[in-house]
Amino acid sequence: MARLVILGGGIAGQTAALHAKKRLGGSHEVLVVTPNSLWNWIPSNIWVGVGVMQPEQVTFPLAPVYKKTGITYCQAKAVSIHPEGDAENSQPFVTVEHTSPEKKGQREKVTYDYLINSTGPKLNFDATPGLGPLHNSQSVCTFDHAAHAAQALDELTARMRRGKKQTIVIGTGHGTCTCQGAAFEYLFNVEFELRRRKVRDMANIIWISNEQELGDFGIGGMHIKRGGYITHSRVFTESLYTERGIQWITRAHVKEVGKDTILYENLDGEEKTVRFDFAMLLPPFAGVGLKAFDKQGTDITTTMFAKSGFMLVDGHYEPKPYDQWLPSDWPSTYQSPKYKNIYAVGIAFAPPHAISKPMTNPRGTPIFPAPPRTGMPSGVMARQVAFNITDMMQGRSEVPTRHASLAKMGAACIASAGSNFWSGTAVAMTMYPIIPDFQTYPETGRMLRYTTGEIGLAGHWIKHLLHFGFIYKAKANPFWRLVPE
Amino acid sequence: MAELSKPERQPYEQTFYPPTPTAFTKRMRTNLLWQLFRFVVLNIKMLRMVRKH
Image (tube, rainbow over all chains, first blue to last red; front, side, top):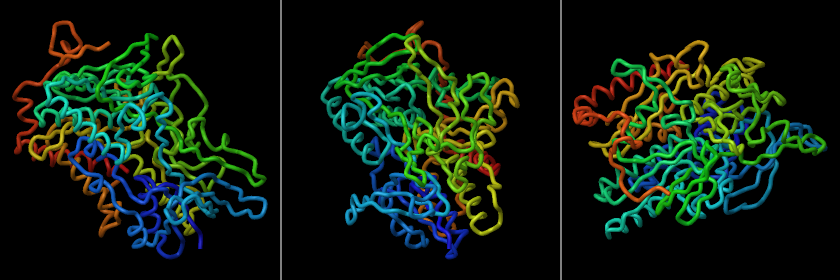
């Protein structure tokens, strides 16, 4: 009996675990190592952040799901990978540190035959002084953070109801952040909620981000055919901000978040400030800090991980300028080039470079988005890797045969702009491919037929459908495989 | 420092240039019949995208 160990039980990890166990049945073991006892449908955290959902509605306990599916559950965080075993034994293993109340702090070796790293991001609040819920700004990255943000929003509302005008700043808290889409959703849900609370006229709302232009979203934006024109998402995004009375600051690297003032640097190299009463700023992401050691115990972390802490896979990582980037730079099997039984999916794999054009100001400060790895692509990667590994475990192939390159994958994204069954809206987008290919699609980088966007109540209904559908799927409820990634 | 005031569409300011929707366009975003139709169309578009994998 072989063992597949999956580090991380988030969107990618859970997808991989369920698909792998379904295919392997009782003949091999699937073991998930995750520090959390709850699974979180992260895309709905923005609704927790404005108080229209509670944490219980976006989470569920993992243990019962793993018990019913026969997946071994180890509530622990992964600390180090030993792909060659150690001096005593050649069996590869990971070192884990337990996080359950009964075994907290205890370390253990977990051996594996195949390993999937789906540990997701470290929320790197420390990259910006004063950033984060322990300091001076809110976050919606976890359901806990989001609940805290909702409470702060209630306190802000109370001040506005007493007649005090307030300034709200929402966006990215560092020059290299990703996830502009999540901050966009929170921005418009806050605006919508303040209108519902009848205090919108007491709020000045400002967006701040590291995008070159609004509508970039870390993917260079996209072109849509609409109204007889082929138009960049910048135009539509600026339209929505104007319509909702939101100012915007782009090309900004937030350097420090004080008690009521944000200090930022722009692409011209100028330092500027913006005052706030409420700020929600997303942190930049890094790898979770896994180390790696060879058989002799020598640290080989830099041979398996990029400087960012994300795991190197089958991408092309040699540094090159933007005009030499190619879609083929992006990985397709997510297999470690050094250890063929190790894979990384979701946010855990190291992208070869950004998607948006890199920009640096005269001070040498990089100010451009890191590439997003959203739910749908992460699920597709995880499923394909699970299928590849189970094929190898069951002797159907010796190498990965399925591919999931972002350069040959499309995505569907729904960005909420206000939550209400009758009056809410969301931007529903599709794009193909995710990584722009200016050789195949010279003017826009993407296939116009499959690259679309519109805002409306239908998008909001779909976002709710996705909320219920993906939680249903992650719980491995009957016919869960019918829910596509 | 950014000023404490709700921006209005002032000439030559940031919000002067982007297009804004007409009242009809805004109404259609939450018109139930039209959005039911768009719900079906969007689901087909998204399933078509998903099926490419």
